[in-house]
Every structure is written in structure tokens, then in C-alpha cells.
Length: 111
Image (cartoon, rainbow, N blue to C red):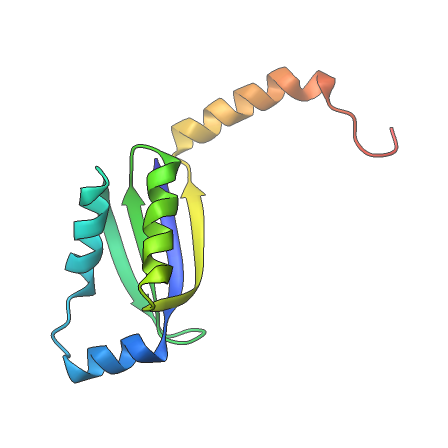
């Protein structure tokens, strides 16, 4: 299952990275994702809304993604974290098939 985390670094984390410019956050994130049985797909940095990061990773179940997110916040290095489940186009096709099957049982508000 693919997931995306977007987040901003805390002032504490930014100061630590300034103190050691060779800090490798990619390797740190990779280690946690792999410990959960997953694979780190990519990691990007961005400056909008405060310096932050975007991490895309693949894990076997959603509980692992939520645990990784919780660990990141608990460590104090990030804030305003958002976890998003990403879907492949094959998964989206399955969702559309399921929605078509369920469509006749749905009633919109006021109907």
C-alpha cells in the first residue's frame, strides 16, 4: 500500500540539521520504513509553509503507515504531519467497479 507523508520540520530539528549539515534524513526514514516491512520510494524537501518534507513509501498494511507517522511526531522533529493513502491506477479501477456495484443502493440527501 502506497502512502505519502507531508510535514514541516520543527525549529529544534532545523537547528540540529544546521549544526550537522551532513544529517541524512533519507537514510533515517528508510531505516524505519524498512523495519516495518516496507520500502521507501522517494523523499523530497520543500520550503513552502516552513521547511518540510514529503515521503512516499510502500508498506504492507495501513497500521504500519500510521505507526511510522506517530513515531515521526513523537520524536519531536516534525509538526503538521499529514498521512495520505495513495492509489495506483489499477486500484482506482477497482474502486470504480465497486462504486458502480453500489450505486443503486445510494440515495443523495433530500432524495
